[in-house]
Image (cartoon, rainbow, N blue to C red):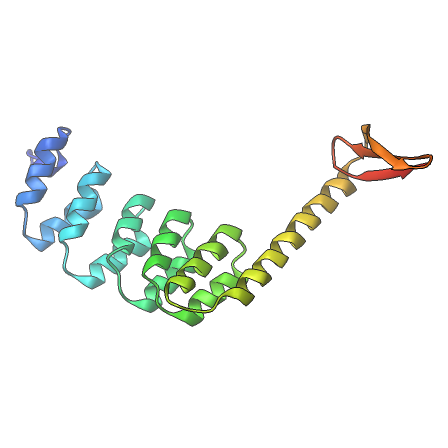
Length: 190
């Protein structure tokens, strides 16, 4: 670049924006998409890139999640979108991939197997938007959620060594219900 940097690298946003608006050279747009200091300028450059292979590369490898998300929005390759939807470290990038994903089998796999409950819900919503019947997935997802909550509660109860019991109510007769403030465990005492 020499002594002078491109106008799209300017700290003045308006100047950088005008420079990207005028730019049509694909190589320079690619360079700007990968290196502009401002994420909005990178997004503008991504919107003008026509090389699908470059968009895939940026979507999968750029260090900034918002830039990966913007590039993912332009990717149409279903195998790349599936890979991004299941492996990217950023939720927003995975969601962007699912928005464009039309591979029903991949979406069903995410809806059933993704360790993150939000990802499973996003996949189910995407399947619904594609006209798929998702009632069984919703039921299975709800059962999984309840199981995870129960396991978390059991973990807390198992690790609670100093119960702090508080009166929770009259259990009828001489029995009274108590709940631990720390772990949520309940006991009935008579």
